[in-house]
Image (cartoon, rainbow over all chains, first blue to last red; front, side, top):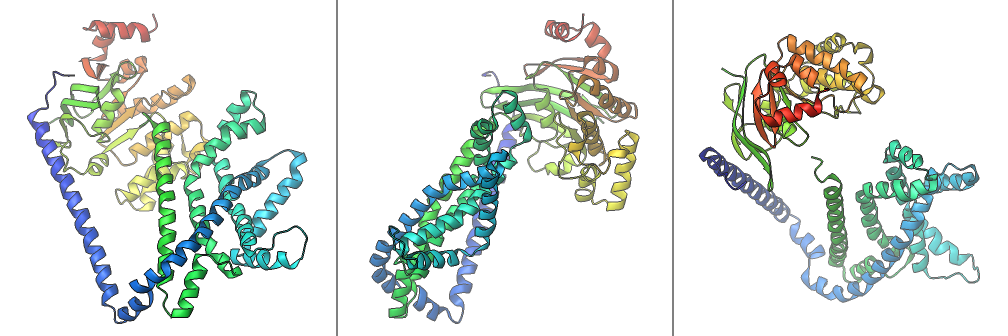
Length: 282
Length: 244
């Protein structure tokens, strides 16, 4: 309404609120600066810092190794992009198999349970070894022999089990009343999953899903164990020749840079979903 | 001295003015019923009293102190007020008795044994003793809402805010909940109740406020509001909600 002007009391209160806000902002800034400066001083002031700095944070070595790492990191990126694209549908199928109820699908259900139990129990690096060295040794016709391909397959197998369980937890977190109301509308179990339960479940598990993908991006480094010439391999190679491990730090920075956009995208997506679904509810 | 007083209260969400120049005084042992159509501002008024909303103008004074001052710690105020919501809002992962002892133990520092004894006594008084160790989802809506009332009273608040607590209940369950409120009212509990139950309001209120478009259009004893309202809007509203 236009005929309302804030009372003097309200103006005073706004001034006070502003002052309190400014105070919180100042405290936040001061605390942040203090904490980081103290941590920085403790690290750089430690007795062994000069040698650590020379070994891990040397500009010259960073510059020298950068072109090779830059080339090799594309291999990691290719690996996780391919793996993610395959893992999502595969994991969803495993999750759906696990929540299926039809007696005809019992074998599928058992397979899905055994798959997740066994695969999650095996350290990913062992899967990489097994597939990258084992499959080519079978000498089967028509199968690729490249360690790169089989390391990627190992990652897909390993993460499909984790991601399947994430999907399943999302599906099972949807309230039973949603099942009831969808089935009351005459939808089949499959249709209920497809149109009602899975869309809601997937939204809820976006943050843990992202967790797994960030983890997967980093685990592409395991391919180095099978001799794939990816970024970590290149960095370690450089270190072994020059006795300087700065390239490992450089690779870490690459990994961070790759994961941060994904994290922000996920934050943005979840915030948007919340705004849409809770609009006006509180 | 009045327990709570509100003057010039204004609350808006963007351009939408939800409460406009609201004034209200609550004396100890008052039972104030807020009536009016949905969206008239009843719930928002309760949420403002409990400092769940930041107000845009006006003064709220509780127990002689201005609580709308930004320097006031809202938790201190809320620890003296109880509030019950339309949707019960019990904590599903805690048993009934744990729901009731959470605030006494964590906020008021009451020892576990003492808090449980008090909670069980209150549950018993309202016929819920057999459900004390169950989880909320095992109870009916009416039972859950009664537990919510007990939970709000376990901290011995000086003021109880009830926000349409029977709106989500089956008609046959409404009675058992209102019975508790009635008992509390006659025991002298001070309450502000937003409600659609006109018969109950007429019965239990010491004073009825009719809200319309964010304003308290008229306030008076229930006998006067329900039989001889001053405002035409009140009359229209009552004609719609009261059986002819």
